[in-house]
Length: 235
Ligand SMILES: O=C(CO)[C@@H](O)[C@H](O)COP(=O)(O)O
Image 1 (tube, rainbow, N blue to C red):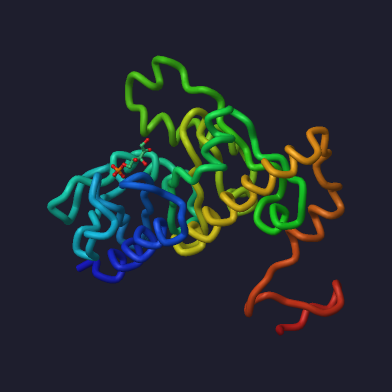
Image 2: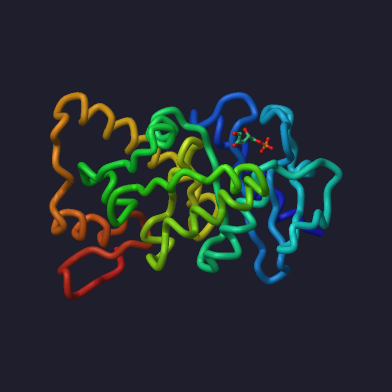
């Protein structure tokens, strides 16, 4: 019944180790079907090399398993909270990619030092506040979603398609789960470059607002426009 949705989620999940974004069974990806009020997510604790399309678990927006025999990812409540909060998005990805996770563990946002970063985020990549002992002790995964939504505030979730969870790791999202994977790859590249830039120049300032605006607004790929700034023509 949800074959296409499961395949979409499956392709995103098995691409995470291919991109070098996770080790072991860390991380997870979900794809949403808003018309049917469900999302497909990785099964918990399953080796990525042994995973199949049919292993994907279908969960509704009440958190109930609708289809599948395996347990959904332990991070399912976080995915559900984000999919409910950000109606523009089609999927969520969570990784433990090393450099981005190092910033998350240090409780540091990723500063915006260059155009690579500016192509994906309209500013620094934010980090959440530390969760309280109460939040950790109760519904940790749901509260993780809450602190991400709180940290984003009123900005467009497609202008900031990811957040570092303090003491944990990055969560990213996009119009499709494939785009969310692309953002997760970009976040790890950006984190690595930022870390090296800070080693070379510890007092490096963030880029100028003009350069940020130029690159964030410029889009790449077949659907992008080019030509005079005020006369957009399809490429
Ligand atoms: O955040 C974590 C662990 O800190 C998760 O990424 C797990 O590593 C993956 O859990 P499952 O998706 O297999 O339940």
